[in-house]
Figure 1 (cartoon, rainbow, N blue to C red):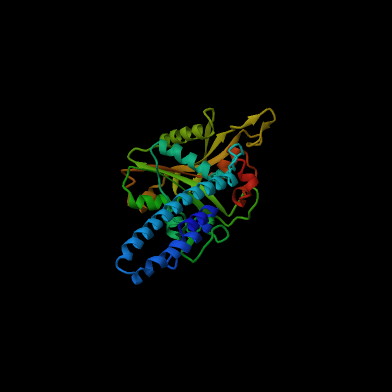
Figure 2: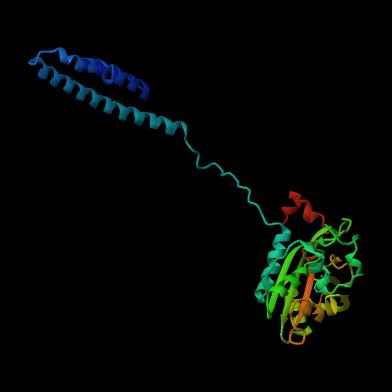
Length: 332
Ligand code: PHE
């Protein structure tokens, strides 16, 4: 029995064949197991002798099985390694890594500049009330921007904000001066889309309120900002303007920052580009928010971020920013 078991074990090439041999001899119905089971019918004298031999045979078969098992395992591993060789000289797979949208990149840059000047970033809701979008901002009841043809209304009192100035009010209601915040975000106006208009666009609002804030502070802040964003040679110019929520109000232009031998592609000859609206916070607006205009003063500004980024990167159609065409986005 031992000899035939060993010869079968030697012949086994795969783990399966080896297992079959094990079951045949040592399994529950195996040949050796049968012998051990039959011991009951032996005489008391024969029993220990047969038992001893049977146990020796079992140990010997088990040892052979173990040796064969290791041998086969080694061979199978060798084979596996051979069939699964890896060519380490093959070029690796390129992972596609996403990038930030040019608007997000520009927004991050703007935030960094203002955070560097001590501003905090505050956000507000895109769906807001007539109170925050117009009334609290001292906007007269007959102001043209209140018209349905300019602003998207959801109900009579609820609308999609048409500027980020809503966040001025929400902030002044909550915080005591000194206040120094910027608020970037989406705004909505009932405009027909074309190369320079989109019914959804981005603004960044700035607000500073403290004792003794002057127009000089506004000018200095904006100068630092444009020099960081467009380059150190950039100049700004104030043009008188009118906003209900600031007095005095101004529009600010920046000097052309991208000129080549062929002229100034962005400024189209004038040498200046329109940058933003700003002014000293109107005393009525401060009062509406519970801030005493006799004690405190402030300035505010608001700019269209899309146009700013279009100018900086010479993008000639605002719609490109929202179409998410990968051929466009890959350029940034
Ligand atoms: N809210 C104005 C606009 O959307 C911009 C602005 C903001 C002007 C703050 C003055 C002060 O055009």
